[in-house]
Length: 91
Image 1: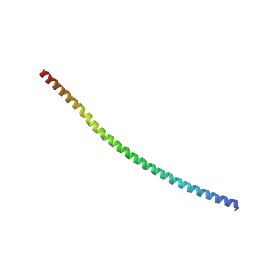
Image 2: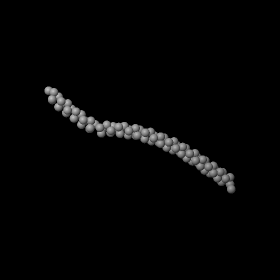
Image 3: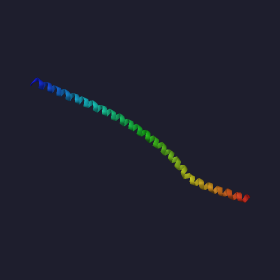
Image 4: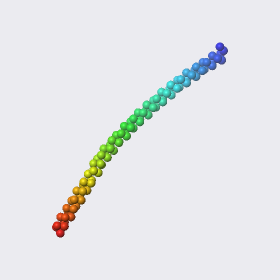
């Protein structure tokens, strides 16, 4: 074999080895970034769930009051009617 062929084979082998190493390193970096991103998303989803649960509890309390208001208004109307009748009797 000529020296040029040997040099070409060595250069090709070195280039391929370097590309494999670079590819492996890039793959590791991508994996690390993806794991970090996944952890961040998981954390944020947990925060969103906590906020949702808090809002849901407040909504349940609000709905409880909203269900009571028509009954309270009906009682108030009845009381106002009785107050009017009592005033009419006193006059």
